Image (tube, rainbow, N blue to C red; front, side):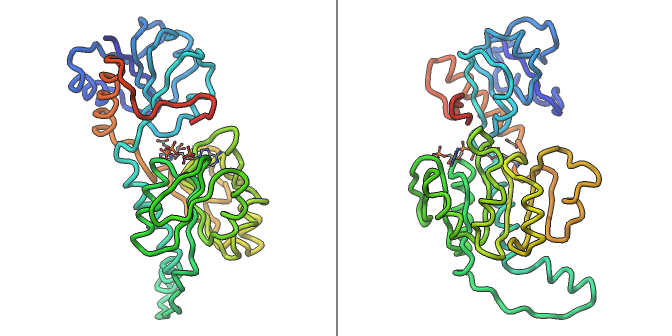
Length: 306
Ligand code: NAP
Ligand code: GLV
């Protein structure tokens, strides 16, 4: 079995070494233009030339959860794409989102500013029941985030495409329930995949439905958010702030208003990193399952786009 690795912005050597350890009977090499055809590929944002040359792949294994970059390419209709299914990302996402929610809820950002000025000020405790947190996307990552938030006893709501039942979470599904879901949220967390249906979903119209003083956390993709609409709603006071991990252009360009906006906290697309060891173990297991003709978890539906 031949496996080719084609991962942008990723050091190839440790991945090749790990995959060779996990799949000792396979021939595993880094792709280069003109490389021989492989049976399977391990990829992250490969160029179109890679797809054009590797039309006979049985499957492509994406070393991330989001497949939006991959689905932008011209792919053969028969091409199977398998994404990472948690592989250590869900716990990272849960800690990132809980940190952002708690930082805002407990006003730690304001305490930091006070302390920097030598001020000893105690603020009135906020009412937890008055802080419903809504999670858009109840998949592998979103569901884990809802369960972590529940540990802190926030009222939690969730929104997905198809109806879901998640313990302790008020679940909403589909476009018809979207406005009701939004209008109940004081904090909104985005964990949707980027698809034709979800691009620009965080916009003036939808964010205006959140309760006044709401807080937005975007950890999915930058293109979900219309950036100027967020800025306008922060400036009008309807939104209180935002924590953003993903941006329409990454790295965030120098001089972009998000760098310095006092109500926006940014991180460099780091909320849930791909962990090499866990990912290699998962991908190796799936390649072997695939070869045995077994079903694998995380097969992408190209029509739905995730
Ligand atoms: P997933 O398991 O595929 O879950 C996706 C969820 O979104 C599902 O609940 C799905 O609904 C829902 N959904 C999809 N389209 C929808 C629509 N049009 N309306 C309402 N709900 C919709 O994905 P995941 O593993 O949780 O990952 C989610 C996203 O997180 C990834 O696609 C990626 O963009 C992002 N991510 C970011 C980072 C980072 O570091 N910032 C790291 C990893 C992933 P159903 O349940 O009905 O299918
Ligand atoms: C990271 O953003 C991922 O999709 O895994």
